[in-house]
Length: 260
Image (cartoon, rainbow, N blue to C red; front, side, top):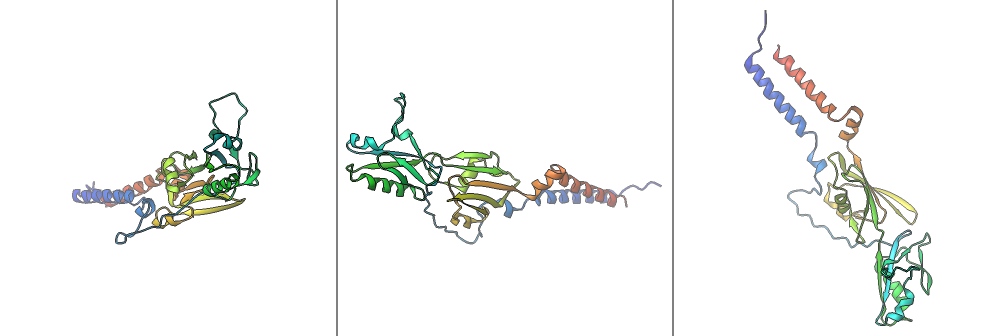
């Protein structure tokens, strides 16, 4: 004797299956793990703006231009390039900070600039020039400021920065932002300063990370976005397989119920 499933029971099972699938899909990613800069709704968050200036370090490339009311008095203190290209100006010729933190500056020879901010380095050179030049002006610019952004971002790679500072959020934006598989609560920043390498993990889902010394990136910082569990699991069994297995299990359960 053939048993015909009750239509109401089948309808109820189908609705139940629909809600279970929707629940499975919507529960795959928690808001707390995805949304940036979270804070309690009832609180107003006021964060102190950090005053950050990068320190000059070994392997930095600088342009240093000395000017004065009398151009002839400043000329000996600007680098000259042995070339016939008259389109190259002193501001386009750069100094490389050596491993000792010094540059070979015209007339004065070795000058240590590593460990100084750009403003401090400017003041140091101006002080040296004041005995020889009336009212000298010194312009310093770091021209090889760069950071590397790797891992779960849309466009990983080395990012060259035109200004002298960049925030972590700026760097992630240059890399196209995190993919849905990136761990937003555990972004690794690798920093090397004076031969010492540090590794720090930053949670950008919390607003207070903007008060961290790692909110502004330093020259040559490496930012690594770790993959979350979903990406790790999918790399083992293939993308979406775990979700499909769950849905299949639900279907088998529903079919079993409807045949009773």
